[in-house]
Length: 181
Image 1 (cartoon, rainbow, N blue to C red):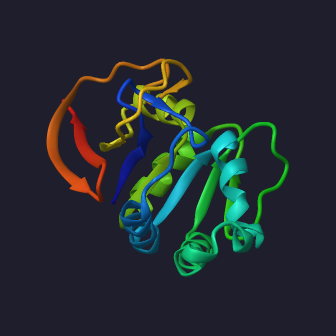
Image 2 (tube, rainbow, N blue to C red):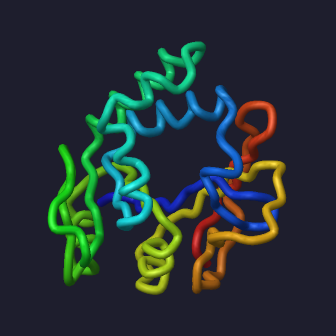
């Protein structure tokens, strides 16, 4: 049985926004290994659209000093199975499966049939899965920035949680691991 984990980079005041802050090189390499070792990821449409960047080769122009890490992440992301929850998308890219209408049954089947960790991507999707009691752990990759507004990590849900672990990754990120009570 798979463990469903919702994890994202988050500001000190609880917001997620990839345009406002990014992982440092150590945390980025952590994400490379995490992506290589995960059983797959379930994305909401918004985050999937953003992550499809890694299906192409535009990242090859981003930062010549980090090209090896960028390539490693792109390769890991392309190889990882992905499931996309969306009623508006009609098709998804390589190594991805679209879940339309009854995504709850599809996610429950994945959880029952797959071994390992499956990541949940996107605060709205995570809120839906949290309300259904399907998320096993929450990983907050806390960064020393204050945004003041934006998309909250916990969107429209207030799960009861207990701290089960914490560790520092890189110079400025702290991973906080919580499980439902």
